[in-house]
Length: 144
Image (cartoon, rainbow, N blue to C red; front, side, top):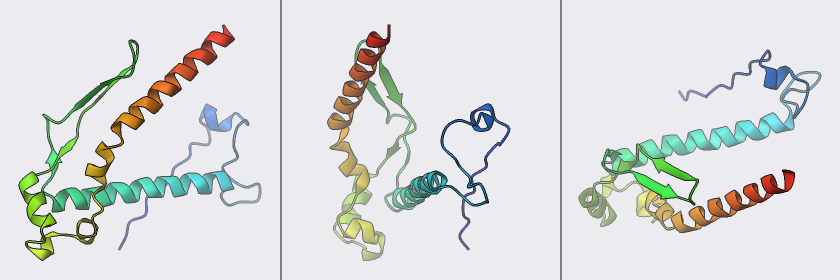
């Protein structure tokens, strides 16, 4: 039995009860298209988290206190990512060579390993964040 996550909306919260913004419910009941979109986004995130748990378990991965990432975007903006997972390289190598075959789930046997592939995007993601920070600072400068 699959447990489906539930969204709770506090109708008395000022950000919801203010009467401005996107509709979340239709006037005669049911979800608005906006809420349906949000539900689909959250479902995708949840599915990814669940798939990640299965992938990490199959690869012998777990939280690694030594695995963290410090990224400085500019003089005023930085981020510290902690709680990252480490992958047992030996176990990954064995599974990648198909020994034993049961240890290589379909997503690994098919060559789809999103964790390793995502590392290649790090420079692009940092550059995009830097671009957005520059735009944001430019907009704030115009407003002043």
